[in-house]
Image 1 (cartoon, rainbow, N blue to C red):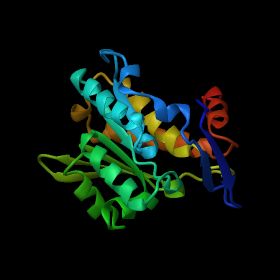
Image 2 (spheres, rainbow, N blue to C red):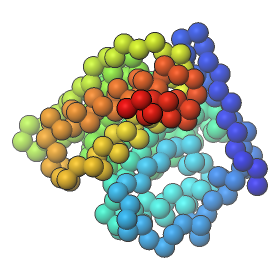
Image 3 (cartoon, rainbow, N blue to C red):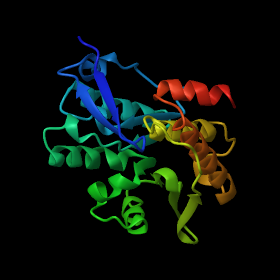
Length: 232
């Protein structure tokens, strides 16, 4: 099958738009039978909504999530809305909400909050989402990021990573850099996720935010990661 193609357009601020060619592409043809029989060594399973359309890949995701949960791995879901890939916004909305309750960690951009929750108030949205997920991360572009979780003693707790001044030329892949860095740092902790205090979570959020901001100073997605990490 053909390899999927994504073409990225940039505006004068470095913000991007996407055009996709995948009808159907190889990634959409991945099936449950292509998965391993178990995921014993997995720390986390991370996925986004791009592959949740009506294709064998959707069933593969359901099976992969089940295997990850059996192995005790964390489930991380980046909503990552790409409207042009869907026949309707309603189909995308239903797919997001089908898989959202499976997530331990849910990551959204500030621009995606309204579509997913029906409100643009970040705290109201987070409170709604925390009835389904353990942790909610909202990335805010140049304004930093926020992490929300429910503390049994204090109720909803909010941690914020501040704005970072950078010379942005291309935001492509910044969200992936953020959640990739966050999960990597999380995997290096000796304590389980629920045992991490605010100080540790704040450091993880701050570092992930710094990595994501740094990638916007270079063109491309994968290329920018290589450049940023080579300087760490």
